[in-house]
Image (cartoon, rainbow, N blue to C red; front, side, top):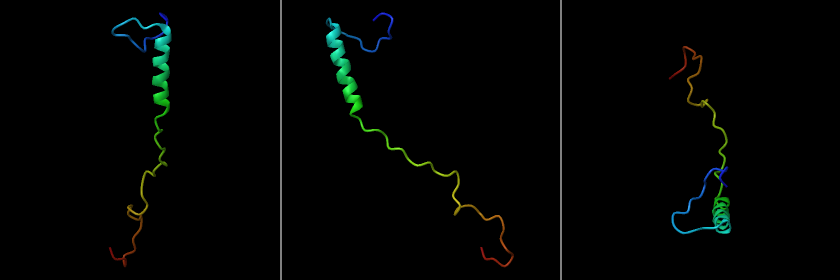
Length: 62
């Protein structure tokens, strides 16, 4: 395991490979059980009802 990046560290005691594997399995199972973020549909960059029109006739009321 020296060539791999350290993910878990034992602060006290002597954990063997089986105990570390059990901890890793539990942590991965907890992470897999989390609900995923719902994807929101993309929103438009502008709203047509909020934009002023490009042309207003001289007789129109504003």
